[in-house]
Length: 143
Picture 1 (cartoon, rainbow, N blue to C red):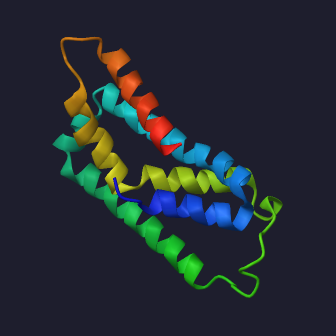
Picture 2: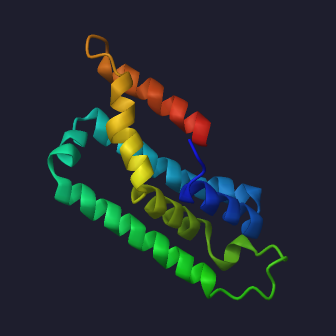
């Protein structure tokens, strides 16, 4: 698992707004991941396998959002870059929404939950419990 855009955004938020705000905003990312795990557990991941157009649309939307974030960082005023900015200037809910949208459109996360995670599910066991186990493990690892 290499650090991706989700981790970089979280580190950026920690640098700009402090650790507590970054952890609170990270709940947006974890909410997106929980949604992806529920989709995979309910079998909707099969739709992504069956429809290349839907998967391609999600990937393109995620890439466009990444480019938009990169542009915003490129044109941002860096005159006070060393100063920590107050969380009130952007709002924790706004930061959590940003983390949610980035995670929801991240092709790497989508692949993990639709292609990688189901390989570890034993169809003879309790499927719901197994997905819950892997979801909690992933949350603890990325939280």
